[in-house]
Image (cartoon, rainbow, N blue to C red; front, side):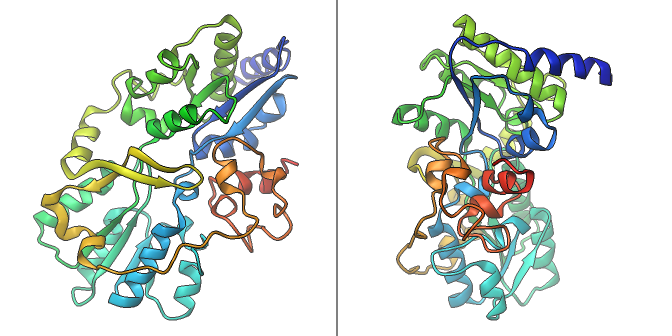
Length: 355
């Protein structure tokens, strides 16, 4: 699509005339950032507003997960392997970064296989990988665990924090405290899940949904399609990212994922425990489950005073509604995870000036 075509789409989008206020929600951390970075958010017509949902895996990870990881490292002396976004996320009493400064062995990795290689390179040490993510990353983590068993790498473990996104959307709709007219659905997640897991939003709750990509044209086309469905009273799930997302998703990736993981109840920041929204290692892979291998009793969970990440992830407020935003809470001194993660809404607002 050439620049002239994109400009034409942008002009048409900006010129939309809406008869009433519409609130749409995105549930993808990359969308959070890309709506700003591409400038598409500045094109929104009058009466259309975008709120952020539980689409950033780091942001929805509750304090008790990090509290357990830190306690395992303290008590059992494991090497903690994690993606970089988790390093500065505040726990109840500190962070991984602070623990590293106090002597904890922490390694930043770029894939779960890197963590497995770390275990192979340190046969006399025990390595715990912090497995935090959605359907997009879970298949790779499943492959890693399966490979660890095939190669009999007994010093590798995983602390499961993986989550499934459709149950979180259902939980928001069931709660009923967030007025949402439609959803921009995540492209990467939908490439794995396909469209079927999202249909409940349209069929049971009357909320139209559009799967969108991440370039400016994708965001414009997807949002325009969603606005059109809302104004026409049409409730379906539409795929506006066909070059990547197929109707049935990636069946092979899901097969691999569910060979190693099974669904479980999971705790989401700001939402609480959502039935069937998490992934836990199956019993036959329990030897790689850090929570089983390294039992601990973490200290009582403590939330940080004034942090409103939980409300933000339910679409109840914008980052600028939080009294800490840009003052006590900045990327350099974050109070909550929404300011730490590169996919966090507070981080995006701060970086791109969404004031």
